[in-house]
Amino acid sequence: MSLERLQHLAAELAIKSAGRWDRILPAAHVFQRDQISAFEAVVYNPVICLILQGKKEMSVGERFVSLAKGDALLVSHDLPVTSKITAASPENPYRALIFSLDMGILRSLYEQVGAAVSDEVRAASLCASQADPAWIEPMVRYLELMDAPLDAEVLGPMILKEIHFRLLLSPIGGMLRNLLSVDSQASRIAKSIQQIRAKFREPLVVGELAQVAGMSPSTFHQHFKSVTGTTPLQYQKDLRMIEARALLSRGVPSVSIASFEVGYESPTHFSRDYSRKFGCSPKNHLARAS
Image 1 (cartoon, rainbow, N blue to C red):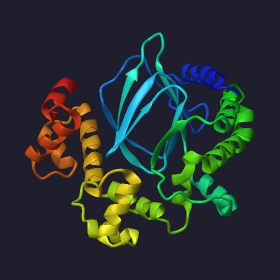
Image 2: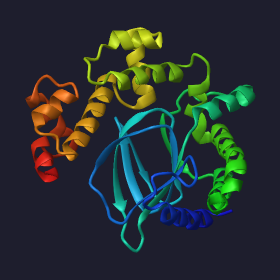
Image 3: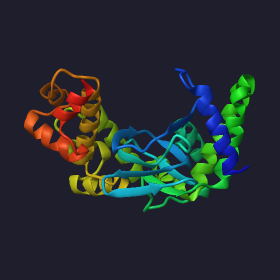
Image 4: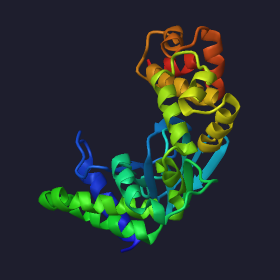
């Protein structure tokens, strides 16, 4: 089973899925663009992303990765990511196969194999490597189910479990193993991330987040940056900027309203942060969206 076969199946799935509100295959999604893009900011949930064609650059905090055909990106925590497609054309579009990771499946697998694998202290929540044939083979078998609904219903969950199993035991799965380890630093930071996401509009109190994680403020700050590549304050700011960009794109009445909606008290402070993040003022973005 080759990367080329997966590329062919992903292209077919993209055509079949066009315009559908539901997914032909649960958990699998094909993302493609036929031109390069400006920098975009989105929140990634836990996923494995396999680049099948084109190139992309991504960053979170101080971490930067450049991805090309045959590269895979694993994201273990919810992360605000900035990305840019750097190689794409109508003849050769950028194409990526994205599998959403099911933490329930991963937890049940870890209970079975946890004793057989070791945690990796320096693993990162955003990790890139060359795609592993051990993942590609079951991914091919999963996409081959797109024209067989009954097979997809019966066999699909078993193949998805295999994909999760291969990822969990692979070198790129270090942070997944850390995350699933009981009372690990990665699992504690995941709890604080949930807190920030739920209350990103409210003032951030590091002491409260540290308490959620069961750490001292200084230790929490250190481990948060080690896991996510950014500070708690910058993480919250990135969430605010992503939400503000979505509001402006939808034509919110004014920049001031957008700034208040995402938790800023000062529209001037908001505009300064927004311009620093996206390279253009929120006023100009709103004008383009109108």
